[in-house]
Image (cartoon, rainbow, N blue to C red; front, side):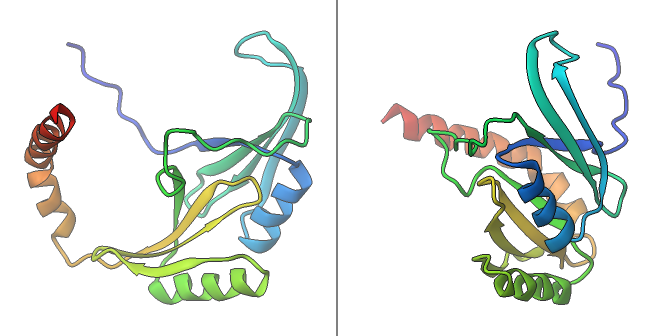
Length: 172
């Protein structure tokens, strides 16, 4: 098999939004991510489908983006019917746990309900929803030196064990 092309990083993660300005205010004014690109079209370039849309990009500190599509119908994206709302989320990293706490306080002053600070033993996080129902996590790394390397060494075996236990659960 040919060797995979190296992935350099995340360019953007895209999600639907109900309203471009509402989403812009949340991500730019509240979370501090600058709007760096906005485009609109009557046709989807990748499919040729005639569908008006707007697409906007907010830059994160590492140069990657979170992006949104406004499809012009003022409709809230529907959650996945077979997935709990805590599963699908976008985790955004800040430098320190103090920054997580400052973000929590800022969000709560703006009327945004948050959960946490949750200590996951290698990160500490808060959770909340954006105006489109997208669950967000603000997190800071707290892992001890060598944690990730040790986790990587056991990850494949842990998947095998999980898959075996899952087969047993589903067979019952």
